[in-house]
Length: 323
Image (cartoon, rainbow, N blue to C red; front, side):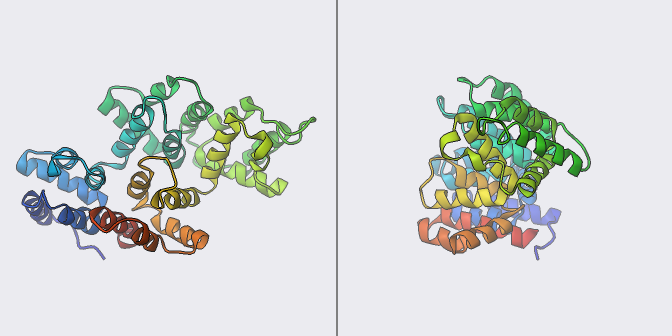
């Protein structure tokens, strides 16, 4: 069990950090191994008070005169979850001029509670002097993922306290009638899909797709494979799969990222930081069931010895230590 984090312990950590800024191994042990993310943020505040410097900026820009992946992750631990998501969203839209990272955006738009999503939007506006939803709407060229994101942004405003089985059944039946029950074969009615995505909360949408599978004996995305795989179908299939089981999605992405088979730059770092104190235990359990190995063992086998590997392994342990 973690020791209580007192005012004196914050000051002690700040003094140790100040004298060890060039020692990345020490910083990994402190920020990833000893402190929760909330405690990292408190340490950042105290460090600024004591030394007049921002640990976030120091870790991003000044260690060893360069920005390493290890220091980038450590700096992310200095941020609140909504500040970090705001940066991830901005990078997803603007980091690569001709390539928007839609999957990173879906992780935020689908995987965050409505109260948290509102804070992300506020943080985005504060940091970048821009509106997140407007930046998504302005993406060129237009893409089906963009339509999904705009609908999901509206769904985040659906603050129903409880999910409704009745509404779930009605929406599932509507999806069936406008999809596989149509004469002439299965075809998605984009208008119906986007309307449902925009009017229901994320938990309600999850229930709807679960009810669909229960009533009709297969997932809504079953018919998307092969001959029906268009851009809209691909985007919707991703959204539905993520909705149904986020930890399973994260386990699959981590498998590809750790073994170097995925092109989603930064996915490993993004997922490890965002999930380390939430559902990492679930992700590890699913990973072991699916791939037959513990996530930590796979990291040990595939990432070279060093501070980066130590940091990633420490993040896999955070849930079990602090939750």
